Image 1 (tube, rainbow, N blue to C red):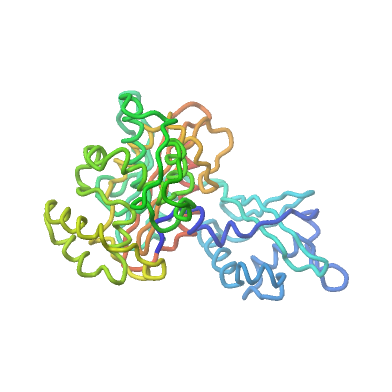
Image 2: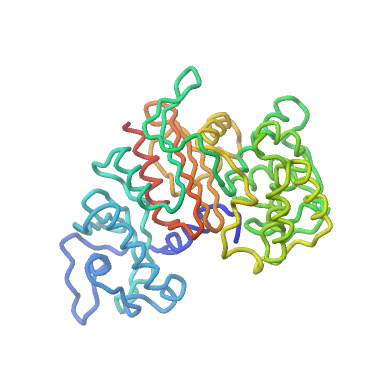
Amino acid sequence: MRVRKLTQAAFASLLALLGLTVAATAQNTTIAEGGSPSPSAAIVRLFTETPIRAEWFTPEFATAVTPPQVQSIIDDLVRDYGAFVSAEIEGRAGVIRLERALIPTQITLDGAGRIAGLLLQPPQLTGADVGDITNDILGAALGDVAVMAAEHNADGTWRMLAAHRTDAPMAVGSAFKLAVLRAYEDAIADGALARDDVVPLAPEDRSLPSGVLQDMQAGVPITLEALAGLMIQQSDNTATDALMRVVGREAIEALSPRNQPFLTTAELFKLISIDGDAARAAFAAGDVGEKRRVLDDLAAVPLPAARDIGGRATWAEAEWMFTAHELCDLLVSLRDAPALGGAANPIVAAEGWRWIGFKGGSEYGVLNLSAAGVTPDGRTVCAVVTANASEAQPETRIGFLFGSLFRSLANA
């Protein structure tokens, strides 16, 4: 299990389908002379012939993204956006048209007509509204689900456009890092910290991926703003724990009293590892004082190996719990935070928007997607989806739907 940024994890199979578009036309959908398909025909075949076959791809592509993975993505798209209509490709760019969406697409074929690269970008809805997409999300996500889609009013309240369990505390994975960022920004505003303050990485900061700093030596100097940027943009767990050490656990707990003690990522990994069952049970059963004693004892326990994490749902015993409403409030309050403004994410890519901030999180059984933005006409909006279950969530499918939900707020 990784407490990770969704782009690198849940969308790994999708974003691995990278390539350049080969020139084709919507009408050029027949198999070319010698049996090799045109780019458009290759796309048509993906959507209309089953099962998807390995020989349609180069060996390198089929190894990186297997035919069953591609089939799953195609099936999810058709299930959520309707039947295939056409592939409309001109020059090096084009779209796949489904009944209820357009999918910007790029494709590369090798000399034998096999797919060497394929990029299916987030669907652009053609007709569905906020309510329709919310119902699709509720049908796709497993277990307990919260959905919030809303417009922020001038008085700080929200005009709800879709609301389901918006005030239910739920496990959110790495989305908790928004609270850490808020505490950091408050310390900056108070003059207690400065963005260019330099701190050395401490041995106790080291955590497991995602991120890059876990591979750096202790003592390496780094600015606080670099830690904040890595925490949000790369979901770097070591950067997160280092920033939490500097800001202080108490400051974060003041923003989120429900989460006491407020876990570092390393503490969570120790609790949910295969050797952490006893500590996790004591943590879950204890009051705040007992929970703190468990964490004190864990300080001397080595960080587990990544292979000892995951494959089972532990979020009910140890996690970070936030409501959808709280996450929207945090996102909007952080609009001017440089770290959040730099967190570009293809899940919520939307042309013409004035600002978008995104953070997601996942572990086994847990999925959160949270985004706020300023629409082209100047309205501030937010969308959150959180799902908690005892089994793995269908992350790619929910990710597609969440992106559609967020972009639909431009016209809501």
